[in-house]
Amino acid sequence: MPELPEVETVRRTLNELVAGKTIDRVTVSLPRIIQRPAEPEQFADLLAGRTIVTVERRGKFLRLLLDGLTLVSHLRMEGRYGLYRSDEPVEKHTHVIFHFTDGTELRYKDVRQFGTMHVFLPGEELDSPPLNKLGLEPLDDSFTLESLRRLLGRRPGPIKPLLLNQTYVVGLGNIYVDEALFRAGIHPERPADSLEKDEWERLFRAIRDTLGRAVEAGGSSIKSYVNGQGEMGMFQHSLLVYGRKNEPCSRCGSAIEKTVLGGRGTHYCHTCQPPFRGKKGAPQTGARKAR
Ligand SMILES: [Zn+2]
Image 1 (cartoon, rainbow, N blue to C red):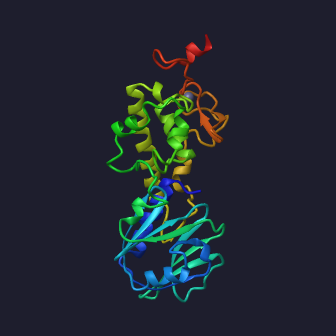
Image 2 (image 1 turned 135 degrees about the horizontal axis):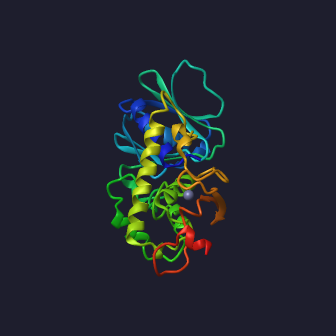
Image 3 (image 1 turned 120 degrees about the vertical axis):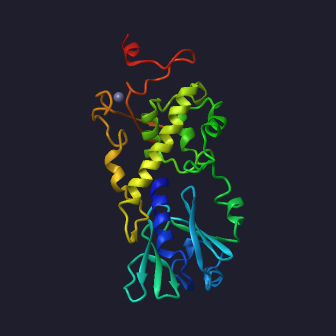
């Protein structure tokens, strides 16, 4: 499943490929992809003749801003977009084709068929499902240390599931939460309301850095074909804890541990991310743990 950096990479690439193009007509061969309006014929009628102004993103949803309408697209598990010439053969599992007036086509392919598309009047999409319940956008200027603390600072639950909750912060999936908590030196089960000021600062910076670096890495590895499946690009090689169970920690050499928290596989270093032992005092050190 693509995470936020992959969707951001898709957004950037898609924007380069299709901004300025005018849709001549739309072919829908799998109606269930189209969630709004109810009928795929209506969907095609609404979009015909519109020009794609730009491609934006909200959480893991792509927002294609057209003149007079917004198309919201979620790739879910395996949705992909690709730009083709109209004379190129259509591949299997291609469910929606946007035929442009310049003889090119944007094709949406989805083997698992879980992807969705919704059409709204401009701006309406932000106040309607599925976008209306989404939380802070971690790569936006609106995401600040203060906004993060205000949102989660008084919650007694463990920090990792809180960070995964899309109604608080969007787009932080399992991989990037594990990476950010490691970089911040915070145990995934730490109660959010036990975090000290400097820990919030480290966590905030770690979230920004981890996602920012992933976007840069992804952005440099994708060319004309947009991989909506969310190939990890070059960032895969710089994951510090995720998928590294039993490997030595890059900081201290301890074996990376894997546990299950809130139903999700969770990777961490027990030395660099010491477990929480009470609300008072500084985070525990490895030495104290051994005592
Ligand atoms: Zn370590």
